[in-house]
Structure formats: structure tokens, C-alpha cells
Length: 190
Image 1 (cartoon, rainbow, N blue to C red):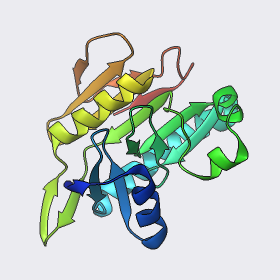
Image 2 (image 1 turned 30 degrees about the horizontal axis):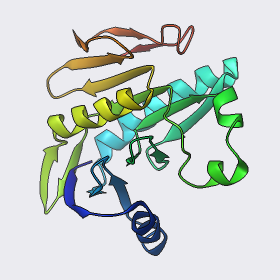
Image 3 (image 1 turned 90 degrees about the horizontal axis):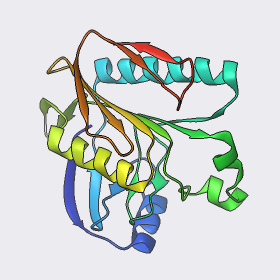
Image 4 (image 1 turned 60 degrees about the vertical axis):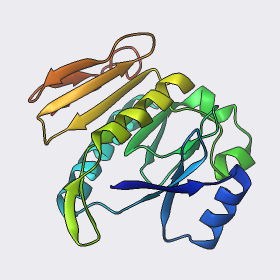
């Protein structure tokens, strides 16, 4: 997905825009910038589906939480509305939300996210997502309560591991990632 900031927008106007354009994908930064997210190409979409499947299989076995795709956005505490390629929220945190909160943009930061630096097509040009924009997004998640996050960067053959209260760890691919205490028993070979 290529993200291009376009303008500043209020929360209410953002929600209205999403209602008026249900086939388009938007995010809102903590500074109120509107970000239109371009669709990814076939390879990125397939990789994203594999990641969701791996987390979903683990979650169905453990029944510890809820898994979300890139189509599900979360309202973070600092005003941004963000969607990860894969997101996971502990079951008790999800159940603490009202039914109305669960239906809309849930006002909760995921416990775990995966961002995949995909290739997308924007204005007829195939290019990878902006690494600085993805890192900014990961920092927003961390500031909002994220416990564990992986930024998978196939172009540079690296994974950036984000943990609450710790410096970002960069590991080379291929590697085996651990869900640690956040996703107990979950491992992902990338």
C-alpha cells in the first residue's frame, strides 16, 4: 500500500468520508492528516493473506483473542485511525468494548500487529511502501499501547521488531519470529 498524506481532517469528517466512500481505504494520522491507502499488487496481497492465515490458525487453537485484516482500522488514543496488515487484540480487551465500539473503529490499540512493506501500484508506477511512513505508523502503535509488532521488509530482507519499552530490534531474513509472551507459542518463519 502506498500512503500519501493529502489533507488534515477531523475525526467526525473522517468517519463521514469513510461512510461516503466504502470502496476506498483511508487512515488518519495522529496529526489529523488524511492518508489514502492504495491497494497492493498480487504478490503483496498473497503474502498478507499468508500472514493472516498463520495468525488465525494459532488464534483458533488458543482462543486468546481476535484477528483483524488490513480492512479493519482502530481508533488509537492520540487521535489516529490506523489499520495494520494483520492485527490481534486479546479477547478480554475486545470483550471490554461495547457492541457499538466493536462495530465502528474500535477505540483500542492492538496488542500485536504485522506491517508488510508491500509493492503497490500508484499512478501507474509499481513501488514499495514508504519505509519512513511505516516506521511512523509503528511508532504510533507503540505510543498507543502496542505490546509487539513486526515490520516485515522483503525489499531489504529485514524484519524490525517493535516491543513496548524497548529499542527496535532489526533482524535479517530468513528468520524465525516468536510471538513471545504476547502470542504464546506462535512462531513465524519469514
